[in-house]
Length: 330
Image (cartoon, rainbow, N blue to C red; front, side):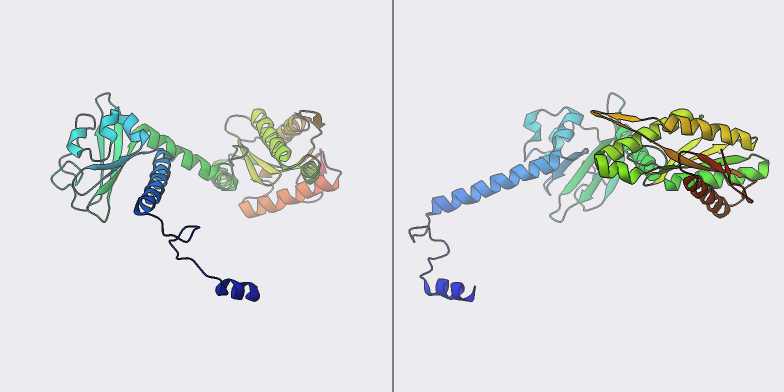
């Protein structure tokens, strides 16, 4: 490598701005290259603007439009002539509802003073729009516009994702923990509950044989079968990997918990059909009933683990209800 560098150093190196013939490019060629680069940057900027779900507009210090995305134009039905750079902010007033007079917003007496602003406007059709303005260093500002309904749906989706497994769409460990604590609080009112811990037998073998995408499909199918089997008010959650849980509130007897466990076992232990294959599915289930088997989350989870371990040791494809003396196979 060092020898090659030395050899290159000995060669005559053309001027950095020279072309292959050793001659400097003309001014027109340089201007053309710069213009081409600017066009590429504009195209990339336009893609970035249009990739957002918000209506977005940028204004300069003279209250002129610098750029806006398609969403912004569509929200207000702007003609193409008013979406061009240089359009005065005032020219948009016939399309965009005015900001409240007491806000430090574009169009008010404080526009361009470098203040953040958030306000809500209402369109003639009754739709409410959330507007956020953020100043930029050159004296201009950036506006984002969202329909109130869109923002509400986005917030609801975020809240849903906080407590649900995105693959199977059942509860996640956080949701399971919250519902377990709620169920424990109901014990003081005499309302018992059961927990069913469902573990897929030989799931690793399914992944190795058919591949991870098929494994994901199997988990989704199992979750759907569990949801179809439980009552309204029961919680189905995926605790991680190939483990699921069901919280069954309002249990009046251990036999009632056992009946649900048997229905879960029957529903899940059916083949999953994929093109060209019929994949046999088997699960093991451990069951605890509160308050008989514990009155704290730690005690119940320890005991249900013992019940599930006993089900696995018994040959899988079975149910074991926790028993402090000897777990019973059902």
